[in-house]
Image (cartoon, rainbow, N blue to C red):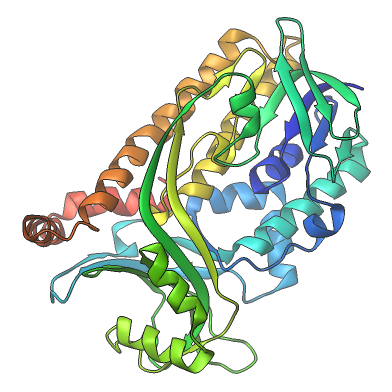
Amino acid sequence: MNFDLLILGAGPAGLCMTRALSGHGLTIGVVEQQPDSALREPAFDGREIALTQRSAATLRQLGLWQRIEQTDPAALSPLRDAQVLNGASPHTMRISHTLTRRSELGWLVSNHLIRRAAWDAAQEATRTHGDVHWFTSQPVRQARVQPDAAHITLADGSAHTARLLIAADSRFSNTRRAVGIGASQHDFGRTMLVCQMTHEADHEHVAWEWFGHGQTLALLPMNDDPATGAHRASAVLTLPHQQIDAMLALDEAAFGADMARRFGHRLGAMQLASTRHAYPLVGVYPHRLVAQRLACVGDAAVGMHPVTAHGFNFGLAGVETLSGLLRQAHASGHDIATTDLLARYQRQHRLATRPLYEATRLIAQLYTAESPPARLLREAALRVAERVTPFKRIVAASLAGGH
């Protein structure tokens, strides 16, 4: 079959791109190796996504925000402030929403709810406009690009062509690799354990990033459990992988007690409220974001360390930038895969992502280093940063997405 666009990957970025382009006169094919059932009812994966104000606005425009609210009124939790802690030091850096013009820095929502809303929105667009063809349960066997068209072959042997391929198939994108785009990878040598927990003390909708000695902790504030009224948060623990295995093996009572200890009992007693999930921490930044008749979006364009909580936000920003350029080109009767158009996308998305990607990598390295000089340096950095209001305004603007 022939398409204007083939989107490879039906994760959040691929589905949002589908929704953003449907209804604008383009024929779209979406390829995903998972079956419909997994896309329609995605499993809870432990991850809470921190949304900037810009991302929240994009989700409203695409119709996802409203779907999430209808599914679970308690799902969207305001992130009012953020604080950074270092070891046992009493000194913290507090980033307040009062440094912006909003009553919150951003929002938190479970990843699986975003995925479900994105699937539903893309399916509704398909029914309304009839311009999307779905190839689910279909791994890509081969992808190649030529000057006149891009070509893919699926596992069932079917061959399809498009004017443009959009790679949205993870930070370790096979599509990106197939067309010869390499990537810089940084393995942080740590694994992240994520789960939901209830706790005694109120988090007051403040997010924590706690760089302890030998561990990193994060607390992402959720709305209270609507059934029990218990205070609730997503807890993130980063440790060397073998220590994560031991945490996963603990029974629920022992796990809750250990997490309360790790959080210095600042939240009182803590209890596990979900399944536990572990993810290795690897940052990935491609050498290029585009090639002949190909563009990368989502994690295929930028695979972030989660410490600054910008991974999905960068994915949405890329969707917004690229879909806008494609809609404009098509409406003007121009080729949607010109070298100039793809270069503009790469230039804009790199400018928006590369500085923070590199800064995040350096921050993660500094704040997980255990040498005495590194501990002294990060303690001094926090003390200085807490006193410099213009710097904190910049951080607050970054967390809020500049809106």
